[in-house]
Length: 448
Image (spheres, rainbow, N blue to C red):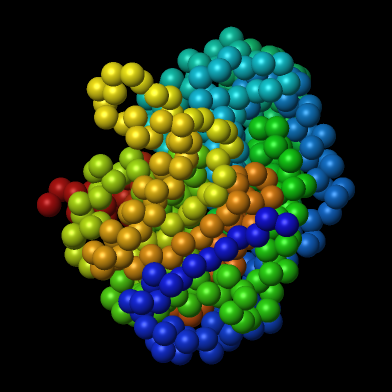
């Protein structure tokens, strides 16, 4: 079994062994709080046992839906924002050919596109232009159906689909993933006859990738969701009990030890561009879970070695309030060796015959040593390769670590009260019914 590994030695040097070990009672208490569902936000702990409770019947149904959509469409548009799309995009990007978007769609192998993650008119207009005259399907993901960004995107894309395929066929090309009983999307799906999947009431958006929210798009991309769940299930078992062999506990303890030592910014580092969108998912997971009550580590991410040529200087010699968590992949998906050249004008013949990944690994090691020497603590999380099983492990590992870390921080890791503030202002400025008083107040503020 390919297992995830965590190395904290280059962070322990900064935090101190005693300070790190002193946090063990807090971590054990946090794990007990999760298991006992006794802490703030306990109504949203459904993700904790989700892998072991996911039935083969559900996976079979999702695969059947995916096969139907894959056969019917050249493009499948996943409509959602935040946790409603980031998890699926993270996994699909990690497992796909890096230039897959440049290829022409093939029968039973559609391209996965995304909409509803912004309110850019240019983005939506360009997407509509791409899909005009094309065979496409829509997976609309929203618990309420009224979140502004995906609601706008779905309205535009549904109208296009109806125009091109006709109303009867369009309903078979739309799948809704939403609340079991209530909300605008549930009402619409029931009225129009869309196939539906349920977002569990006890699973919040940023923890929902292992529900149909993530599983259906991932299956539509052609990947094995049973292996994804298997990896998550094994990590669920690995992180169930407290102790030094629990990697989620180790990670949560170390990041909190560094935070209390003044390290306020965590950089998630990858050396494989397949992990770019995984970093985006990770940022929401930790940022939305911990950033409240004027607390929380700021989650940021960098793609190395690319960003070493832009952010490397600041990381090496800037303010010492950061630490790095490096995602290291032992084996890339492909093998490519560097050719020789008789003239050697570029001076790299000393690399002749080496795998490109060997150079990348030495860059990773050299950067680690340089940054540690520069005062940047370093946590290293290693996986063997990027496949469905490994991605399942990584997803559950970070979810569990996030919950432990949040409780250690003293916040509710499962709510997001601050997210609503911008929405209220936006609704008021747009003149949404029910916001008349706020609209007048906002206008007065803007006139000053």
